[in-house]
Length: 248
Image 1 (spheres, rainbow, N blue to C red):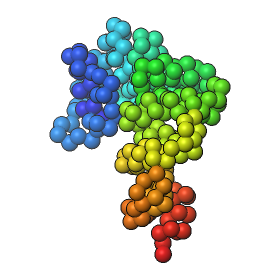
Image 2 (image 1 turned 120 degrees about the vertical axis):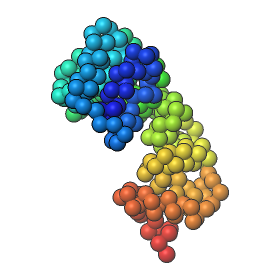
Image 3 (image 1 turned 120 degrees about the horizontal axis):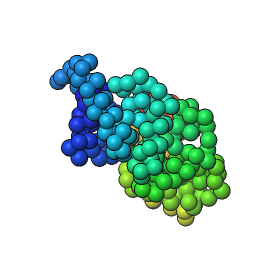
Image 4 (image 1 turned 135 degrees about the horizontal axis):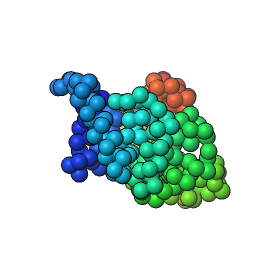
């Protein structure tokens, strides 16, 4: 955790910080070096100074630290303050995080309009998680006029960037013909991509399609293996399908 904070602090000044560097798990639990309290405080001070000087990446990082309680005491109000400063400068990660704070239990009073506003900005910059959320909003009609075509388009954008949840949602769209023409072959391809990333729902759907030979060449053994994997993770559809088609 602390190596993550320190590494990113110095990366800001070296100009190496990119969206891809920001991963809360990438540098956690590293046993190579144990940072002292003084080193941690120095790292936090570097980020704070850069944020005060208007560096949007530092502002986002400082917001992330206050949001998670890494290196500082958790403070959602301060997190929101720094996320907003970075978001107003066009930082897509900050736009996504700030918008997310207005969703239930996000740290700020729920406000669907503000969440949608900031996630739209992040999604338009190519942020895959924001794009996924846009797809969910348009699919359900929550905060926007329901539009299954728009939902599929947003999920396609995120799916093409490798977002497993969006790949599964796009598979469902093609499977049921919601927002796109029904196409079992395309549904299977997107379910497969999501299943390979461990998405339980996609494992269940792709498994059922393999067992039935629906949109793919029938492969009962592989399909049952996927259904069993999803069933062991308590996916109801997989449990029913495995018992019906595989457990005999």
